[in-house]
Every structure is written in C-alpha cells, then in structure tokens.
Image (cartoon, rainbow over all chains, first blue to last red; front, top):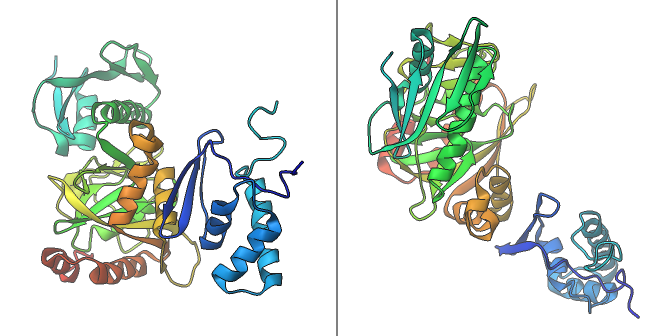
Length: 98
Length: 290
C-alpha cells in the first residue's frame, strides 16, 4: 500500500484558484489563506496521490530546466512545507481520520 | 429633544438620535460630511450620556444599548456596529479594511495591518493633491471596479511627525485624534471612483528610505482577502472577489518611512500607473504642504 508521504496528495476540501501560474489556497477550516510561488504551485498541482516524489522531481526538472539534484531538493522542501501548512493530506488529516 | 443626525452612507439612510448637545457635536465632527437624507431609514441609533454615571451609551433600534466609558469608546462602538450593519445592507459591495484616496477619477487604496501607518500616510498624502475617501473602509463594487467614499473624520493614533501638523480643530479622544473633514487640506470624495492601484503598506521605522515593490496578482489577492470584511457575503467565500479586484488594479508593496519621502515615492509611482489625464494633473499639481 502506498504511504501518503511517498505519494503526496493535495487536500481537496480547500478553495483553490490559479492566477498567472500562482496558486492561492483558502483553507477555511484553519482560517488561513496561502499564496504559493510558481514552483510550489507546480508541485501542488501535481500532488494527486498517484505521482511519487521522485516523479514530481523529474517533472519539475524538465518544466523549470533545472538539474536533477536541484529538483529533488526543491520538491522535498516544498512537500515538507505543504505538509507543515496542512495542505497535503497525511495520515492525521486525511478525510475519515479521527 | 435635539434634531436627529441623518447620514447617507453607501446610499443608505442612517439616523442617529443624539440625547445631548455635546454628543451631537461629537458625531457631527466625526460624521458631518456624510449628512443628508435619502430613502427610508435603514439604520437607527440612539446615543448620548448615560444618567449620572458620566458614561455614554449607544443603542441600535431593537437592540439593548451598550455602555461606553468615554467619547472615544462611544465612537468606536457606534462605528463598529454601524459598519457591520452597512455590510449587511450592501452585500453587493466587497468591503476592504483600507484607506482610500482619489486622484481625479482614479482611486488608490492603502491596505495594511493596524499600526502599519496607513492613516498617517493618508494624512500626509492629503497635502499632495488627492481627495479623501476614507482612512478605514474601502467598499468595492465588483461589477464596476469602483470604490465608494466613507469620509468620516480621519483618525490617527498619534500626533504625526512634521511637516504635517494637526489642524487646531482636531478632536482628541482617549485613544485617538480625529481630524474632521472640514479641516482636511484636501477635497473630499462625493461619489465612487475607479480603483486603479493598491499599496500594501508596511512601516519600517528607521529605514533609510521608503521603497516600492511590485506584487504578483496572487499575492495581492491573498493579502486583499486577509483584509476583506465581508468575504462570506460573496461567491467562493470571497476569494473570487479578492481575485477580481487584484486582477484589475496595479498592486504594490510600500515600505513606508519618512513621511515626506514616502509621499514623493507614492506620487512618482502613481505618475507611471495612472492613465487618466485628470489624475495626472492632480499628481503634478501644487502641494498644500505647510
């Protein structure tokens, strides 16, 4: 079974809008609004619960024309930040969890 | 019984029955510019002294009156209740906590946290050819992109630094200074104006010079949403309204500092942003700088 950390999945119970390549996320549950830069927006958009972190890094490397190490580092950093902000589902905040 | 004070705010008739002459004078100083009569009474208040206690009260028709210990608290409680009720009466408007100025027919908004210096910056900018709309409330019509004036007396927390001294008829209350619109060095907005630019103000005490930076539309939308007062009255929990506004206007971050330098920077920035000929004339006109 896939672990959420390996296959990050963006939350679907938030309001999301894309403006000029940047995502704005309204999390009414937490009473917070977030604005993601273009790199974070690209990653967020692909956190579908199917793609692995490695696959996200591969896609980022191609889309932003950066080397593989930079892409892996950037994706890892952004996924951690999205987790901290509560924008990625985790075992503790997945729908149906206590 | 004194004559009631009739105000017209965002096209709604607000009637304030003042119980004594001193309280009426206080309200005329604060809201006098919005006096008028239009349509049926939408909101009705009673304000005044509370018996022998030395305190005050403010009550909206149908509600229990609230006590206030001093004139400043009385104005605060009245304004807080009235603006919430006006937001309910005009759910079509997107209310933003902001100061608003107009150059010609183009309006400029200053958005910032309490204490960011937006009222002080507004007071200074009023010496530089613009019209006063508000230091507190920027209601935007999302259909037209226009912002409505809310010209109550400009409220400052502290005496501003030179060279923008306070007029002699400034009203002093416990926690604030109120400059009646009649004492402003500028004209006062009478009707809506097209919102053209937003400055998100951040005060940097001790900074060598003020600075301006461009903001992405996404960041501007997020910051606007954070300062929206009635977002839930709008579709998408108000997020779409913030995006609508941010995509129509130029958005900048203003790191304010020395007031004179900040005003010069704002004017220079607006000269490159505002397209309307009248707005440009206002920006190039003489200052009423003391």
